[in-house]
Length: 82
Image (cartoon, rainbow, N blue to C red; front, side, top):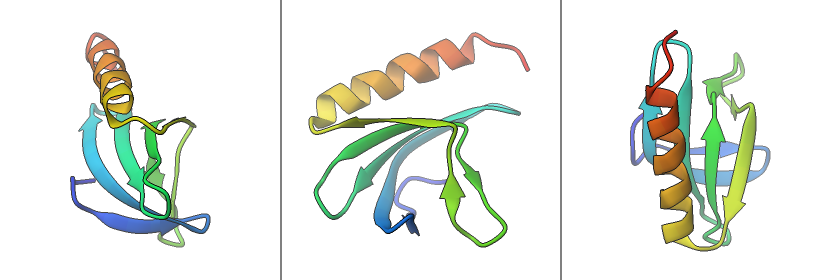
């Protein structure tokens, strides 16, 4: 997934702001277009029907908080080995 990619999921229109992936794991930062909510996700994957799902998501109204959460989780994930 690349920054700038826009997609719909469960009635939400989302834009990818940042995405960090290792072999079996990933962390994403998205913005929901309808209200500007930011979402950090873990293990985002594309489904057979073209939609996306993730293991969990944290929702933020403040971009700086979302960016901090994304950076923290990407840093933690980078320490793992697959």
